[in-house]
Length: 118
Length: 113
Image 1 (cartoon, one colour):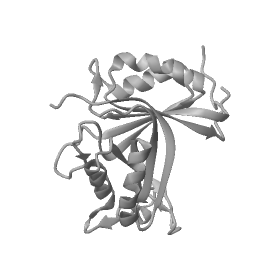
Image 2 (image 1 turned 90 degrees about the vertical axis):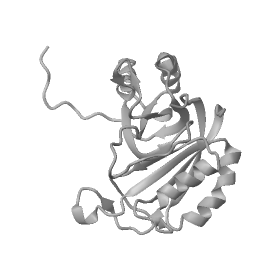
Image 3 (image 1 turned 45 degrees about the horizontal axis):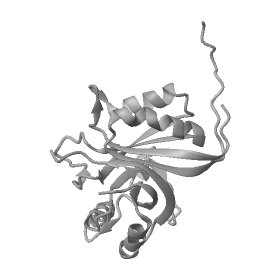
Image 4 (image 1 turned 120 degrees about the horizontal axis):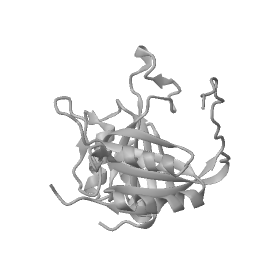
C-alpha cells in the first residue's frame, strides 16, 4: 500500500475499561480499522488522565487500575480516514476523537520471510 | 462541555521522575489542566527517549530505565490552550512543549456513575 506525503492522523482517546458488546472497545476499533483496510493502528496505554467526567484516573500502587486511558492512533489518506469515521458511530465512543495532518516520511512493511500456503 | 471543530493539541514532554514540590510533575500538569477547566489530559509513558540532557533513557537496560519520558497531551480550544501556557512556564524547567492544530470529530463523556 502506498502511503506518503500529507496524510491524516486519527487519534481516539478512550478508557481501557470501555466495552462494546462485552468486548474491549479498543479491540473493536482496531478490528474495524483493519477490516476497513486502513494502513495501521497503534494502541498506547496512558498512565494518567481525565476526560469529560473530570475525574483524574491515575495509577495507584494499591489499587487495580482498570480504567486507565488508551490512545488509538491510525494514519491514512484523508479520504479513507473520513470515510471510516461513520463506521465508528454505533460504538458510542465516550472520549475524544480528533484529526490532524501529518507528513508521512516512510511507511513500509517487512518482506515476508516465509510464504503462507493457500 | 462543548468541544468540536478546530482545536489545539498541547504536548508536554518531560521526565517521569521530574517533580514539582515533591510530587510527580506530570500529575501536577494534569491537576492544573483540570483546574483550568481544560477538556481533558492524558499522560503516556515512553519506553525510550532523550531530551536536552542528551542521555538516552531506555526501558531495555535496567540501569538506564530511570526517568523515562512521559508526554502529557491536552486538547482544547486554541484560546484556552494559550491561556494555560504561562502555567507551564512555571512548571516545566526541562522538557519540550509543542502545539498543533487538530480537528475534533467527537468529544463526549458519560453520565456520572
